[in-house]
Image (cartoon, rainbow over all chains, first blue to last red; front, side, top):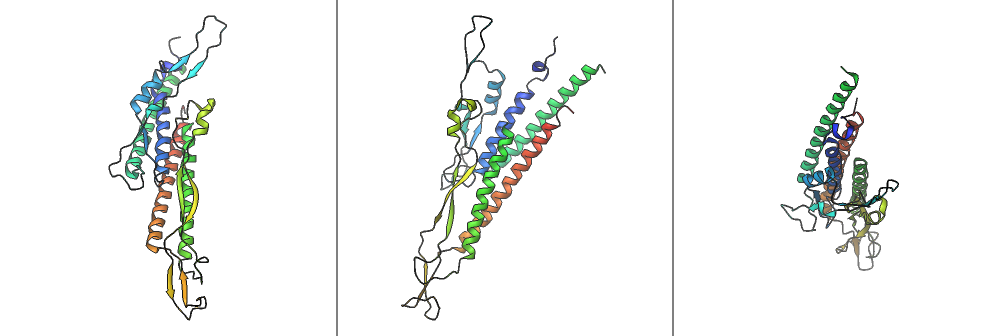
Length: 134
Length: 146
């Protein structure tokens, strides 16, 4: 069968997952808007997205020499994908959260989430009509 | 799921800001509480915020995948009393005046407290908004495939 869920849904599940990750990161920045010394962080969406799409090189998989071997491996945590925001107006207590920037990013992220969601939804309705043969 | 984490994060910020609002209310309420000695006088209180780090969880293998070393929310480390000098007023007729006729008033700065109050309530509002939009995102996900 040519159609499976992995290929039928395209990039959208990955995008949706990355969007939720980013939403939680930005929510954390907003929560710490008043914490002295807190550094605002954000992710390079492009990179995270590409990484989670082809999660090849960073995983350490075990060699399998027999059919009876259980596949396994260690996941390598890449902390490099989180970056620090450069504030436009640095504050005296070392906090780099700028509420308006974070809020704008959060809202933009929510909209992008909505877009990914709509794409995914239309994929599902396409599959559904294919199954029903309409 | 990371959307659920948003509720914890925003919730922690909301409770931290409630503590802040509470200390502000206490400071303003006691702004004129007189005492006859320095030790007995009320001093302005302020909470100390700090980010909650997820380092412990990061080390365990179960959460290696999702714990990316970012902080998850904010906590109140403690409440400190202000060191700024108390107000000493010469009021010999005051019932709490000491032998020299002085009464001590708290070191509450009303302007500072009002600013703190506005800042805390704004931060609270913003976190409510974050929570609301996370909620609508989650509700959208629940309708997937319908």
